[in-house]
Length: 203
Image (cartoon, rainbow, N blue to C red):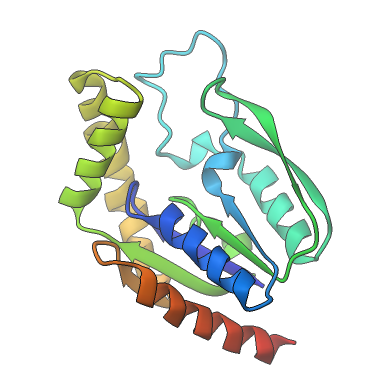
């Protein structure tokens, strides 16, 4: 069973997804979590990161993402080479064995027809732009130690155009839309109940 979770950058997708996996495990459903961030293509050494756009479909190894998800849905064990932001290469590794539920979260989660048609549930985290911008600014300035000019370029020249043209319009295909500005506890439990019902029907 495949569940997709999409939304803008810093909408709360990863937090919601991780809490969802934790609660699903408690029900006895073996669940695995992947992020579309794991499938970024390697960035050549010497590339100026100011101009490199992470917020576009061309930045993702889409064929590899689709193949890995398809194999996992077929309940086959998979070893995934994952993108590492420290080295800007696919130098990481993740081993996944057979699971009942695969959750794929990320800004690109709704972007691939081959993945969409295999999904049993699609969730969109709808978070106010001001809150997403605040979270992203804090991430870039405090964790990544980037300059104001770098942050504004990433946010407004790259992330915002992709969100406005691709991510936000895709929310119309979601089965569930969740307010990313609210606490997730009750929303996660409600979603777990829905997933459990769908899983029972599919058995």
